[in-house]
Amino acid sequence: MSNNTFRYKYSFSVEIVPLCREDLVVLPKKFCQHFGGFGPLALVTKVTQAIHLLDPITLRVAEIRPEQYWVNPFRALMTSRRLSVYTILDVDTVPGAHEGDVTVARDVDLGVNDNVTYLRSHLAMRLHAGGQAKGYDVKSGNFGEAELGAGNTGAELPEVVLVKPFYGNKKRNKRRKWQLRKLDADEVAASAGAADGKKGRKRGAAGGADLAQLEEDREEFMQDLEMDPELRAGVNIYRATSGARARALGDADAMTDAASSVAPSEAGGEYPSIPIEEMLEGLVIEGEEAPRRD
Image 1 (cartoon, one colour):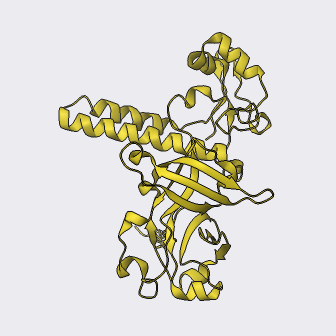
Image 2: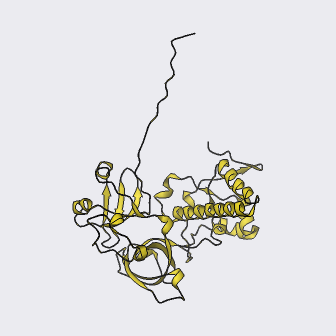
Image 3: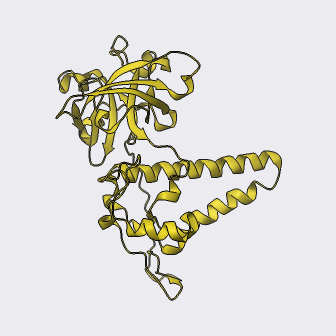
């Protein structure tokens, strides 16, 4: 029976820029000319309403608007999955400048060969001899015309592009005074991955690898939050509850750590930290945790 009621279903097709923060890109020649000799190799530092780029050689910055990008689109040459760990051998900085000269060696090459790379980096003020950083090994990429573009095959490319300091993953989580709220679905997925690992050797290896990759990705995200105030501006960060701190550090260490307002970096430590004033209270009342956000 008709009642003059209609139901419509709408479908939308949306194409977004296929670039992420920390991607290494090669700009089309038109963009290089437009920015006055910028690039062609550039590092994506941020993707918002525009693509923010950094030239790793000249350390100049540029911004590409969406209407500019879609006229001459380009893709990432290397993504964060291909980042390598480098050991910092020496840092030479100039007072008052953010950039400087850095001497690095790939972590896997230490004790194997004498391959050392000298480069200029925008991270020089945040690095120190003996520390580590993650970067792209451009020299071993063997890129051709298909990846670089017809007009960039003869361009001079740096051997290494440093992206961010690296502080390692071991025992870092135990020293944090803050935590993130996670969706229950995230915990269920992690538990399912661990459970799948018990249902056969082949399937178990895959489940364990997925869980390990999840933990590694989560640790890198938390390190990014600690290093980038702009990134964590839109993230709710909570003070770790006393129970969580006690389980991680022991009761005495937890009380001492929670009472201290000095950030590890300010106290001469190696890790960056989040100021306590940026944290939200994660109160526990009568043994019940505060309600989670929907």
